[in-house]
Image 1 (cartoon, rainbow, N blue to C red):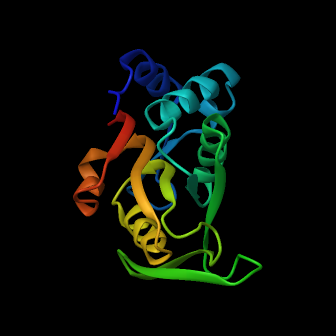
Image 2: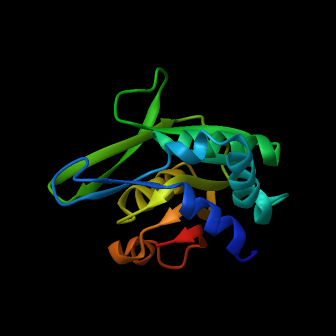
Length: 178
């Protein structure tokens, strides 16, 4: 797997907008909307995410909601299908799901039961890896569907939150680690 590109990481860093106290007091939110609003940088970011996975995946799974932006684009770049991973109750057909722990309570993510065939190689994509709970749940979800999760690819990893530790023995890659 290729190493993250330092020039791209610097451009991503420069594009981020810090929003203090969002979504709650004490949280410093990393806003990626300036990145996705810059066509050239969005293209470079998608290319950077897709680069090591050409010929290695059968589908890309994007985590609701910003993971849809990057995941769908990476799927197009790789010439494979895209699977939306949604919050519970949002999918129209038969779905399978996984519950996972949040700081206060639990959440559930789902994918269509027929989203990928058994044995499919799936890449999980999201905008940010924070605590790793959602990414770990997505990996379990695709393994429940008898797929092989080949990696987790994110634009930004918030290293202080330890998300990578919740994904032991998984190929985890971030274009930018802060």
